[in-house]
Length: 430
Image (cartoon, rainbow, N blue to C red; front, side, top):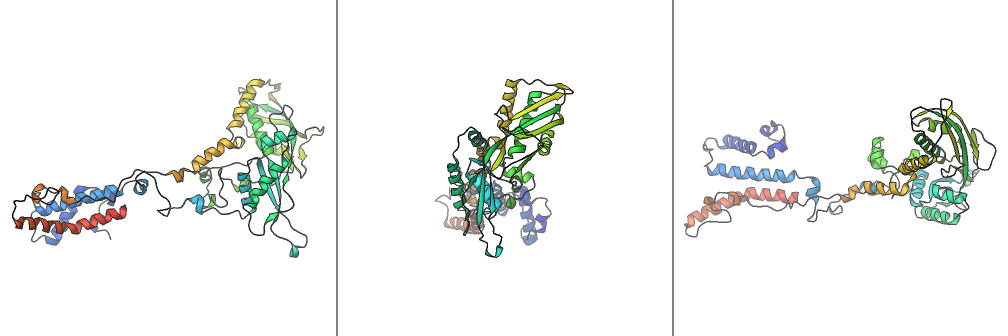
């Protein structure tokens, strides 16, 4: 319970660091408890000297207590032992083994960098009473680099299957398994022809590079990694952020794990393009498969395939820009440089760079350090008393009478009551 006198003061921590306030409060207590017999409160009075020494000691305790918590917890090398202090990292205690289908998708995407997405479909039977539960059909979509390799005939399908199987098996729960085999979806190169009107006085090559990126994100639909800070800004709490499997490369939002895209709709692509700054309107946009003469507004994709836009292919995107009714001439070399910068700046297009950054951000909790303060060491207040008291390290002269030595020992014994409390406080703080 805080004494009413101290309670009247605005800040208790400020009071504990304020020597004058502590001294005045001590004088007030003396006046209340011994005012009839103790009337001299000047500096020469031994009782006032003792009071001042104790007030100084309290300010020292308050100063040490006010150190940053990292300093209070640090060892001699400045490191913090989480285990010894029973501290647990949020990503270790809040995450779990994969339980839901979304959990499995996140874990496999995080484990297998060769894939861009994965879908697990529970296998059920018409007669549900005899249905076998826990079997999944797994379809995987290759990342951009492997998709390009596939299109030119370089395939390593079994390697991908083995990695996905190993990831799933290492995390599966009891009575869960893969039905038949993992299916590696085949990339189908999508051809897009568009006529787009842009604003005047803009850099047409920059606009076109942004349009290419918007088309790629609309068709390829990559899974994006997020950081803890990103998700907090979206309103997620810590327990929501770390709900699910512990990922090595960052965090994945449930909303980014979309369903299989079995068609490409021109309307969706137009909507993405319209979000690019400098676009006036999309006049025409048609979609077709590579090698097919048929084009339209909706392209249907077979269940064994996935739509893929190859930005490096000269035939994949044919986008013509207009200012008013005049066609814009594009400087190809300048455009290619801008396109590389735009694509390289996208975290989802440069996963290695982004994942290294995420690791650095998410490891910040584990690398907390501080300055070692050695708070448990107590230095006796007796050493601060004037030499005439004879209770410091210097002691008394050997020639003083026994009665004087006894008085010094009596004062030491009296101060021991206070010093034990002070030393206990520091021991607990340490």
